Amino acid sequence: MSLILYKLFAALFIFIITLIAVIYPIRARVYPSHNRILELGDAFASGIFLGAALFHMLPDAISLFSQFTPDIHFPIAEAFCAGGFLLLLFLERLAEVSTAAKHTQKHALPYMLAIILVIHSLIEGAALGVNSTFAAASIIFVAIIAHKGSESFALAVILNRSQLTLKAVMTTIGFFAFMTPLGIALGTSLTTRIQTQTGSLITAAFDAFAAGTFLYMSTLHHINHHHSEHDSEGLLEFVVLLIGLIIMAGIAKWA
Image (tube, rainbow, N blue to C red; front, top):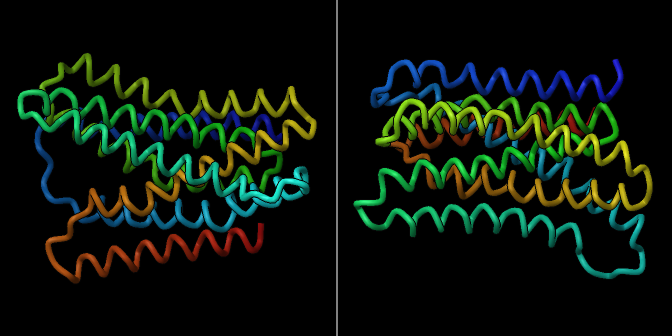
């Protein structure tokens, strides 16, 4: 299987997983009960994202920038990483400001959350698309799959809680589902056309920036959206997150 065909399969699989994950909340159209399995799945996915950022994407970006810009004594990769982290932090804070007034909360929050997830999905898809090896693409593919189902489910639940019509909910979810495959296509097209030093630097920039978004989703975002009712639940979530992190460390070692 060629790398381009593999990325095409990855894009299709991610798209299908995204749509499957929203079937239950869309059909239910009710407030869901406390779901520990979903929360543990989110914790595991956060560990996957954290591992992908720290053990693969950021180190690879640092290596590429060091190789092609040896005369620049500035942490370029780390700067791109910080930019990705701060972008999602800004969008989430913007969502909080936009929903401060009670009369706008029900309508603004779902769209702001969708914007955050759409941008993140596009970036993570591009990060997969720009990688030129099966090992690198597979690590990011695993990271995306681990988080995509729970992310889609959570978005659908919040959209259902709003006053949006079913058509608006379906349109928003469809747009969100299309973003990661679009990012993969854009990233793949970019690397196919630019097989030069410039292409390598673009790959490094995408990897570093996406690493920052992964770090945000696995740390501040996870903490802000997971409030355990008991200390034991919080400890269990940490253990599950650690398992995801260890798995990604193992993949990085043998990939």
